[in-house]
Image (cartoon, rainbow, N blue to C red; front, side, top):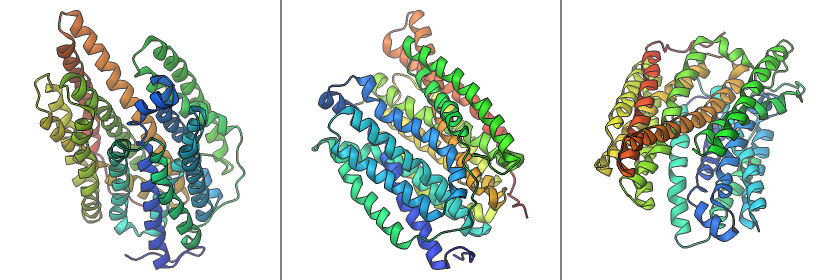
Length: 475
């Protein structure tokens, strides 16, 4: 690998070390994102809280991510790489320690919010660093490593959590991650140097609450709509309405601030047609991926009567395979560009979603596992080329804002996909039961109906993939 010499920055060796350090830190923080889901029943018992309240350990993490990620475009331009990394890992480490010592649910929830604040910064920081340091002809290979982090770390989280909780308390979920976080923090303090230039633009204080209302409202609104109860639907509708209004105001504010180079999230990234197209395709496929991840455990446990441990093991190979093939996809991108990868990836993902419309109460669980693996492979063939070509079509000045935009879209798309699939599942199940079907056949019909909607939406990605082009970086 050859790394350019930066006026403000690292040698080739230190630049390569910085990327590996950021990859390790991002893996640790993303792994933590999914470890609490399995622990929710333990929290209900140990802390004496309701199931709905315990689920806020995951919901609050997701909401914090959605609110913080849009600010990273500004943060990465305003502060140095070293400052941003140390702040992120300090927050993550502090939140992890607080979670390990949490005496009650309130403190645990605060700990998760602090953790998420650090986690939200890591992925945009990693993307921006790679785009700054790595030559265009090698970016696919390195962006493929980001896909490993995005796929394998969340997939391993529930499995790691299950093994720990099999013999230890939920506090050890935090004690296990804390040494890794502190090691990354120490390594960053000793080894990381500043990369690229930064500006001294002032922070627009009005944009911050607009960010919280816009993206927090959208993510929470879609998530609540997918919960399925009348109370959650009401809360979700209110939050969604607030989020839409907040988003409109946020966009208006950023367009005004762009005139004086003070935007919190610079929306000029959408002037690049390749970037805009890639963001749309990422949103479609992430919605399908997150929706499937939410739907398949429900199907396996409620319809096929598979236990929770086996369910986790059946869904683990998808994330692992996605991570394993990511480096190959990255190398193929560097050699052939995005279209030869994105087109078959979209077709494979769409084909799997169409095949899942055939799920029934008698489908063998191994076929569900193979379907999830196929969907993961299709998404892997899309994600690395789309992210690389999207950011590659921007000028260096917009790398941080492009990274923040992609991260924000992923969070919102995940919430939309989850809400859409679960809502359609409920509609299909209710319709089937109204026609006289039993509970299990009705849920099986609801699952197939939800995948039908997802399959139809995936056709947008299939059509859009033919319009993807090689990135041409502005001069």
